[in-house]
Length: 213
Image (tube, rainbow, N blue to C red; front, side, top):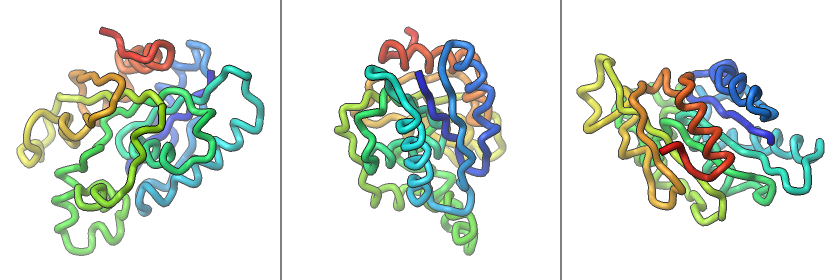
């Protein structure tokens, strides 16, 4: 089984190596692209993931083999846009989104009000509620998608985020209708994708289409 792991904003491929190492021990063949998710809107770099997916497919996969996808934070939005745009949809298996602001980020909304900030860090602009409202995601692809949210935070700006959240993203923003499964874990945004408990849920979803309950 092959898996593409997609990191989030202001991170690199190294941020997904811990999960990749775990999945490789479970028999997965993992790919961790290093994407420019700092100064570019998430939707404009989807073509880079499409190129990687094309390479994986053309390198040869079994007749019943699929390429699974997992993304942390902004990486999950990249996956959703990929599912909307890709010509390789038939080769994609299951997808897991971790701490992904599917309904926008309150912190991104606040940052958008700071003059000049999102003109430089354009990835942040693309996480705002207004920006995401104008992105067309195709939710009826036939691909099973699970989402994991965190609800532990001790960050100083936590009071600016309403409701349960992981310090950056609200639990309510991670969930959206049409998910095959949804799980809330007691971790923060920066750690949730480095925890073995999370890895086990991802593995179980890839194999069975649901998280561990």
